[in-house]
Image 1: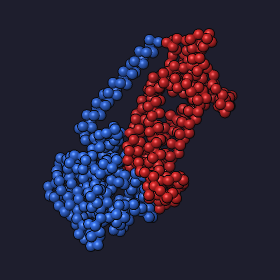
Image 2: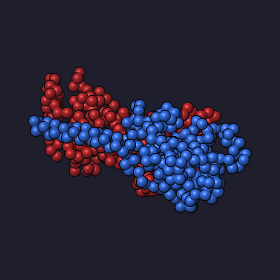
Image 3: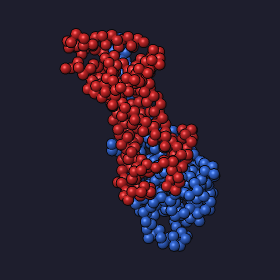
Image 4: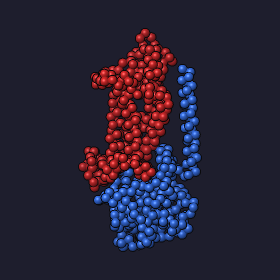
Length: 252
Length: 261
């Protein structure tokens, strides 16, 4: 009986020590490498932090799955959307010739780009999946310029940690960390399946992050801000999603 | 078989044959502290996962096979329930309130706690010999006679004898092993297979299922299997004696209800 309890005691002691030191090490790594998501507060912060931190350790450089041309969905689904505002309709009437993407914040050369300017940069395409948090999905070919290229043009400061991106709809804005912003598959997308990007799918300009759920791929992009902190944006939770009750990081 | 031996010793000590009260201090625990604590943590997580899973499901109660699926493609099947999103043609004239935000937060948080608790249980159980001693059926158990008599007893809803208050019968052992080593790993795996971030690092996690929508469909059926297990588990606990079995899993003290009267 004494032997058993001693063995149990040793096992429990080892488990507790491993647990405590594991947590300590994890916290230190998280602090150093920025593994804490902006919506880490509140009762779900524990799960969110674990998800974001482990994904950043596992997926920092991984590529979203790409598919063959034959796997492209015949009818890519245009999701339900709030009605488009007057500013959008005006630009749409002009064939989006006056559409502008402005970039400011921690950059050397703040700039405003026309669609024609964006299309003059090296064009890339990817056949990737859009996955909605509701459960449905489709595969399409996305054509655009890698965000990293445009960030190079404006020259981001070394202390930049996030890119905040805004839709023409003022209630619709998101942000991503630099691992995603510099990721080769993160595109400013203007084409789809060999044609112009349809308005229903986010045309004329949509941010595409194929390693995260669809709601991070914000439609109708007009403005980017490069920053080292998300505290000043909205309620400081990182984007409109956590303010509406959804996770900031949607790589799951 | 050393474990079985010690079980029989304790059984002898606790058998209320004399009719006198048995001092609790001489009785070994029916379930170790680790088993009891992890059991109830997993129970809480399971309920959280079940409620939030159902909540996420109603935002798109359609299932597909292969990589993709949406309201423009033919589903494998559609549940005859209303949806929390107007996008889905359900045939119902109304849309349920959308609760996906907190449901998703809680689903993944509960999944983390369940997985970490499960790992703690699994790893320590290998070291303590819990799987070998308490869950792996003995050679004698695997004979057709024991097997069929166990099935017959279950079918008659026969109240298990004193021995089974201390040790699992062969059907229990096989069911628990199946749940621990097949259903739980599969539900975690199919869950991860739906994560666009995770599969970017481990693409084979989803391709083995034939696609992301296939993984979602399998996730749903494995969850159903776990719910079925939970239902049978609770019915069996009631058949065996709700109070005694609950007491054993909460305090560790075994014995039958008659012991108390």
